[in-house]
Image (cartoon, rainbow, N blue to C red; front, top):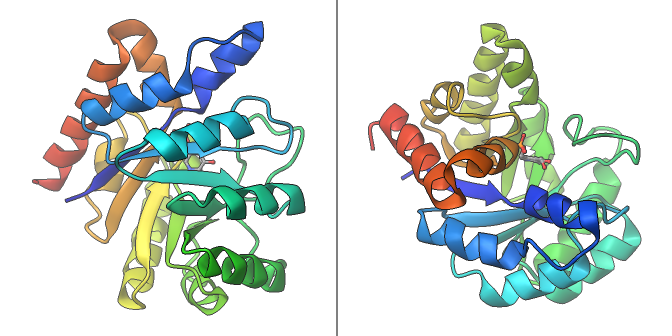
Length: 238
Ligand code: PXP
């Protein structure tokens, strides 16, 4: 059955807007899980603009499903992650000025750095996924780098609604799955576009943040997670 990973970064974004102790991301994780989330995702950024080390440490203790930490190849971040040992790590590129992750990791350019980061993470029993652009070449590069999974960037499809990009996403999902990689996807997904991605059967997990936390402001977090999962399962016929 397709899984929903709920990205709770923006609960911490609201907390950091005031530099106070609330809202508490751990509380959000528990509500999301009780509403049907199959995993909790956070991005520990080098600038610590939302999620901080204490969140990752506490979430690792509390999350009952699985904790997926998105992070760059930054040495300090990698040292910390290898110590906390979340269930999954998603390697992403990071540019300090970006508003959100802008694209997939350039696996050709950073192949050896990615490969050695994966070796270290896997020696700590952490499963690794790599955030990639919908380019079919990424499947064998991710496999050769030692990844367990890829997460396909759906951001450009979400922004443009360009169905050619949907075909590229499908093509990469099929190729990666045929090579034995797990296939995840995410970025920019919301209630109206998630069905297109959830209908691709090779994709087994979607990571969704902004749309769920935005809906939560209006309808509450439990309902926002519940309805997203319902739309995903309907699209999938599960
Ligand atoms: N996947 C990755 C790798 C991301 O960096 C993000 C954003 O943190 C997401 C998924 C979720 O994107 P959104 O917040 O647009 O749902």
